[in-house]
Length: 355
View 1 (tube, rainbow, N blue to C red):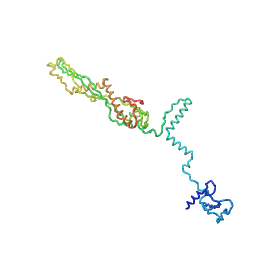
View 2: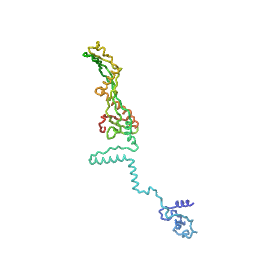
View 3: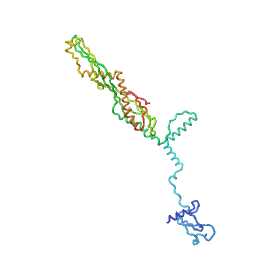
View 4: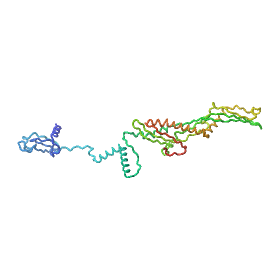
């Protein structure tokens, strides 16, 4: 009931700007009594005009019913939200900072554009950084930040070297001689053989090889993904030079193709003297061992063999790294490889920043 009376008084009020103790609308001849918070009461008549209903507050028998309002004159002060307690300049400063951080790319683009125009107006030729216009939600930065480290992480996971193999043919001669006093006694045969040699490429020389300061790994983002169009990157790497065969066990001889092409012997063979001591049927193991030694020498010293061998190893290394590690990783991140190059450097030599 009390709340209803207060609500009714407010509905009948004429506003807070009347300067009276209550906001209720006072009818002519109506006595309004305002009860203050300290228990005291104040009253006023509803009209200043003369008449039978304009008596003083004491003549209540000639007055209309009294409306009692409880509270301080003018009503309670309005409650202010915590947001409006903050100074206006501080609120605007916070809003500007938040908007600037969220749209920092646009702000930087606008500032650099205005600065470039001002410098151009005054004839100053200053190289400013290039920032493209873009909305915060149009180009996510997570993939561009992670694309380089993720590709390098894949490369560092390689645990097998690349092998480049080449096949070459050669001739070798096997001879045998027996001393017969003053009589010459020897026999030799020349064989045709086919050899296979392999060179290795260390695809993962270790963490120190991939440090940023060495420039052995450079990945550049040429463009970022936009909608259905993938981004483009270029990758440049440096790897140690291919390693040629290190022992005779790194080469093999195809003994099924090998055959004798010529033979020679002393004038005393196959006479009675040399014919008894020398047997031209050479053991297969002896011939294979000698052919393997000759093949190893050619695979490490003869340019006609070493050059194709190194080229085969470099091609195999490029295929393994590019086709099995770099391209699949970048495709999964919605990027295409525009260019991929490998520079070959000596293991102990440093390489500058790659292009």
